[in-house]
Every structure is written in C-alpha cells, then in structure tokens.
Image (tube, rainbow, N blue to C red; front, top):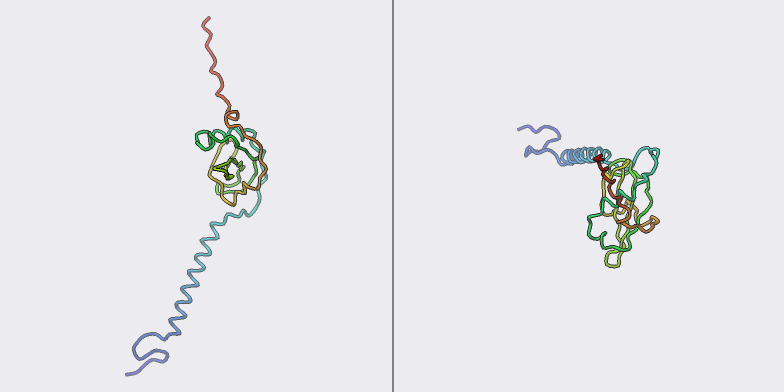
Amino acid sequence: MMIAPGSRADGKPPAALLRAQRLGARCAALLAACALLAQCAAVPTESAAAPPAPSDYRELAAKTVKDFQQFKTSSDLEISAPRFIHAQTGWNWLVCLRYADRGHPRYYAIFIDGNKVVNSRYEILTDRCGAQPYEPFDLAAAVKPPPPVPQRRTD
C-alpha cells in the first residue's frame, strides 16, 4: 500500500491542515461579522445643519406624556431645552423630562422631527438627559385647548 506524501496512514488529513482550515473559517466569520457591524454604526459620518428648534416642543412633550400616570401625579415635572442630536431615527430634536420617582430623579426622552414626535422612551445613557439644564414644566398649561368651532349665523 502506498501512502501519498503529507497524508496519514489512516486516511485522515494531518493536524496542521485541520488547524489551517479552522483558522481560515474563523477569519472568514470575523470578517463577515465586522462587515455586518459596520452597517449598524450609530455614529454619523457627517453632521447635519440644525433646522430651527420646534417652538411648540412643550406642547408636543405634554401631548406625548399626558396619559402617563407618573407624570399626572408629579408636581416637580421639569423640561429641558431641545437639543439637535443624531438618533436611531436620524437627526432629531431631543427634549428630556425630569421627574421624581420615590425620591429618585427619572428621565423621559422625546424625539421630535419637524412638528411631530417620532419616538419617546425612558432615557438611556446615550441620551444624556441627566446632564441637561431644566426648567419647571406645567403639563396642564402646556397643552393648548382645541380652537373653538365657529358658530353658524342663523340670521
């Protein structure tokens, strides 16, 4: 029986060849993972010119959280000024609400694009709501009543 050079008598490939194949498969998997993760990068490549801040951001924030029980009962509700940031939904204005929950400060983030809310959530670390200056926010006063319906004249 003749054995080919570089092979074993039992027909299995040499250990060095197996190691090289495993290393090649690992490198291919690593490159594929890097390519996929590069598509998910949340860091913007260029900054956008900030449009004017929404003037009705207080009303938009109030309408967003008006039905939340913790905001209805909170007497120390505060709001931050809008900041233009890059988020999952693109370039948006971010407004943060701060309130006390059992003696601890809590934050709620509201993302505004133009004149509509595109996302809202409890603050996560990257929102940086805790580092913002706040001013008092009266939830009831911020919501404008609907315009009156014009009455028809019956002359």
